[in-house]
Length: 415
View 1 (tube, one colour):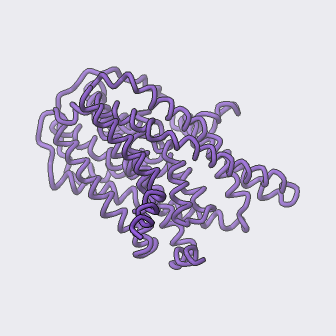
View 2: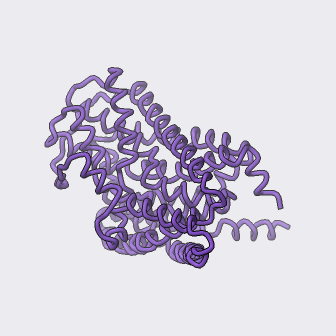
View 3: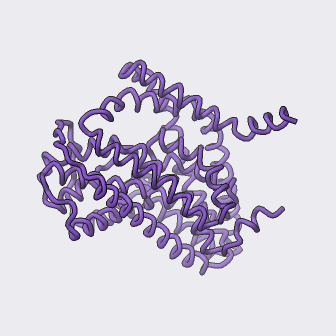
């Protein structure tokens, strides 16, 4: 009996155990060899490159096929309204939790301003930025993760056009559904290499950035990781319970391990989409919801970026001797977090749009403030990505609860 139970456990959790084994081995290598682990970084890069290459068609097929197969067009509007409400609600809650953390445990220390290369920031008017965010001027440019929102918008339009085509678009709808299945199988194959790829990435993260975690930025980083861990465990549990009661709580924590480890290892919400979609399927979240909420949540829904924005602003205010506790400052910080959640991409350590926005809005000197904000942004990236990516999974549960009713989980678990 014990052997049967043990075999069942290994069968159910073998992929997670392998993933944990790879990450543990990589972390040990990083601690032992430090910067010497750069030699195995290509293994992590190859894994991540394969993921990014396959994710673009996956997003197109999942979104387009989900909309094309909706029974009624009015469902789309209702789903969107619920999704936007959930996204905004959790982003603001996460920001408020981090603000309370900073107020309860103030950062009183001098931050050393490090000299690091700055990215070139291109200035343009608001209209141009919105245009570039939502559209591209050539079809080939859609096939890049840097144009993620434009790709998502295009996928929605293709799905809606297919839905409107009725019988005449039946063959194309079948093509979209078939493509969706093929791409999911491809991602499943790529994820089999995750123990090696994520192990190499963890080795690099620990070996290169580990020492800085115990240096100048130790206190703000310690505060950030502690508050985020609290938010991850307590609030995600609360969201899961609200979505599905005790069953929802159990099914969420049973299936969010692989997405969590993928997010921590890759520091990319986009790279975590496949793991989230697989987890959503195991959690019995309806595909027409998960296939929209999760791909759209990756670039738009960012609880982690929200909390990261708050800690960066708090660090910058400490550097320049400003009062972070003023109500106008806190309200402005909340506004910045919402904007950052929308405009930041799913590229690891990419963009620094949030840092530039905060520095500009608060009138801080760019040359001194941006390097410090970039360093903090890099060091908080793993935990921020964990909240960003895993937040999409629990958001999908909450959207399902609101749109499908409180008995959605009971219905799907019934044979």
